[in-house]
Length: 205
Image 1: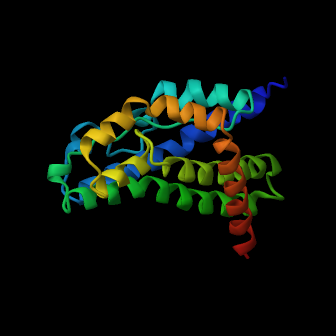
Image 2: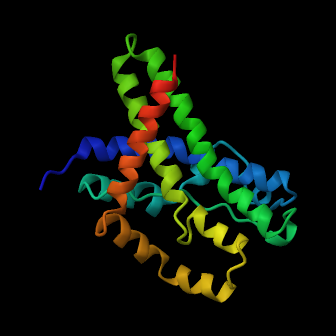
């Protein structure tokens, strides 16, 4: 079995870079919708360590990338109070979608940076190109309807019974590990993120 330590380290570094705007986007939208919970908990910031979950932002992504089993990782979840959000569950859906949307925006920014640095700093350009694909991968990954991922909040917006959501949440971590490492969902998401990255670069002048 080939263990790619360099890829694993670069992926974790990129995850740290991409996690900050992702979680900040959740906090910012929640605040704009009237919920001061993220601000009170210190999440309305671009300081990276405020958004790190050591298991999800370091250990698991390193292991899954190291063994070539897709990529499993997340940041520290931003807590929200649905009762304070304008629109209630619908507001919660907007907060949830803000994170993946930020990943798409970051993918475009990194693609532009890679294009500009291609001849001046090839090593940085290669790093940014990897970031484009990983950012899109994270956008797709976070839309999976499995707690604690952002996509699971859309289930609440669709008014599924809370007891059903809680039952899914009990096995959420196990479901994610099995889906990514055993059932090939990670490969499927990698293929889609590659196609998305290629489309972004083709759209750039």
